[in-house]
Length: 333
Length: 93
Image 1 (cartoon, rainbow over the protein chains, first blue to last red):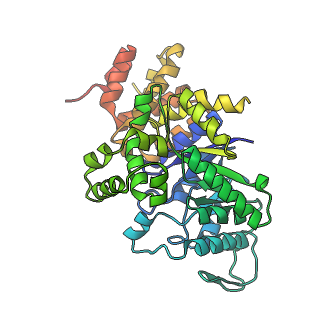
Image 2 (cartoon, rainbow over the protein chains, first blue to last red; image 1 turned 45 degrees about the vertical axis):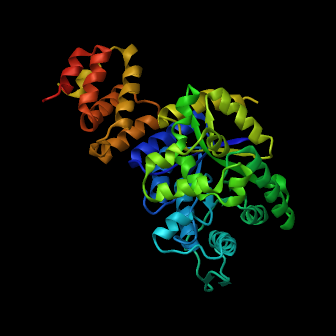
Image 3 (cartoon, each protein chain N blue to C red; image 1 turned 90 degrees about the vertical axis):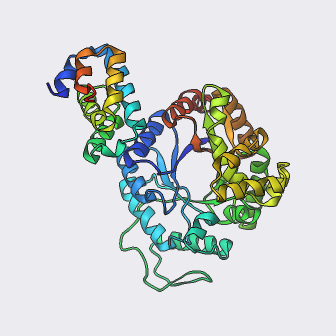
């Protein structure tokens, strides 16, 4: 089954994000993912309000991280959210992004182990397991558990980009949020997830695999491409050498963008983003072009497509365009 | 005259379009934070039920844009030929 999600960064007033979320539900999107960064509105406050004004759409953090939020708190948050949105809650968790963690002096230590243990603790908390947990990164004593029951299954999606995290996601996640947009990157990621599933003795077909893309749609291609430039600049600046090499992006060019972003030379940084970079790191274009690109992504084995920031030149317009021109193409299949 | 009375005078055929335009004003206003949260929640209530073009939905939207961006609201009314309603948003300066 193919699902379609949408990501919101809660930078705007709560009622605007909620308006867009309700709009997405009206148009038939399947999931809403709210990013979790300390400098934006709180993810669970945002989700609680959205849960209050929606009925069917699945929703959750996309993604939280165990460095700033202890997994027992994530468990408590998604469990509480489930009381407002029973059976609709999904939980995205990943290692976080280094830039944001650096800002608060938090080191991304042992990300694989940390995410692995976090997923286990969240599941144990939701199941109200009484036993103690003694991991390498986290410990909880016997009896440290939620004081209330969680009546529904809450699937845990692991946000991943690198091969090891992707394999971990395949091994232990209920789903994966692949942080990429290009079909080659997604295809490689799906292979790693499959390997992880095999390692964990699980059926690959049971997993919900989402391409969590940088996305922009507009009636004309030029208008769709323009808003992705800043997002792509950050992606290029943060990409490891292997990814840059795969997309024929010279390291020195990426270094230059990174430096300009750090120095807040926005014009220089964004001006260095070329068309090829946009095609490597974003899905954008007219509705017809987006349909074509999404079709290619589904052929790699993903089951879920998430439209991430910036969405389009106008958020409201982009949600409408996607919901009215792109979604019906897939939903009617 | 209150917004409720104004809304009653708006032709039914124009309500959908007006609601659309007013939502744009709300979502794009720089001063969106001036909209009281209780009013914003009332608007979300009507939006969830797809009733923003109802009398109650429009009444609340008009009140909200009077906080968020009255000048643009004036332009919207002018563009739609809602002369009477336009006066409620007439720029003061």
